Amino acid sequence: MDAYLSTLHTATTVLEVTQVIQRLLEDEGIYHFGRVLDSPKAREPDVYWRLLELFSFGTLSEYKAIAVAAQLPELSERQLEKLKHLSLVSLASASKVLPYDDLIRELDCAHEQQMEDLVIDTIYKGLLSAKLDQQRRLIEVEFVVGRDVRREDLQAIYESLDQWSVLCEKELDTLTDGVNTAERESVSKRTREREFTFALQDLRMAYAAHASMGDDADSLARYDSQYTSSEYQREERRAGAGDM
Image: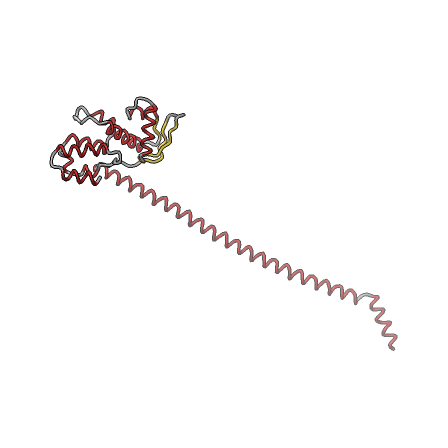
């Protein structure tokens, strides 16, 4: 692009400007023309500036609709192919599912195979990422590059981006609330688990102490039972009588 701009700035005649624009529109590596459109010299050949504007923002259908009335130059084969690529980009930007019949009509293809070849070529050029579904006869768009933007469309883009930003902030707030709620529930769960563990330990200690006291009482009961029996008392009296 820099080379074209440099040549355009040094052009001294309308013919030279026209030749620069013609070569630019045939260059298969350039699909954005905003910098050239901003050049005052590009406006000198009016019909070529309008053609350049069409390649920047328009489609093949628009060219066919106004070419005769606007006395636009006839497109070379390479320019026509390039405008078809750009038209496909516009269609893919407007809809992620493109029926075969619509593409054949909008891209002025003679048959289905020609349209598929054009789509595949556009994909290879990096302008589009899509899947061809021959069974359902449609194109499923995954990615498409952006085209040049008219200045009068910038405000609408700004507003759209602003709405998107507000929506993102709302979604972020919702996610933050969800994370905070999850953290609170996690802390509450850990607290309950600790309280349950402590309560279980206290219960085990109390049970152990109670069991120990129960064992001592049983021993004392056996001791009392042994030394208060009638047989023990008789033996004790007999032993006392022997001593006397």
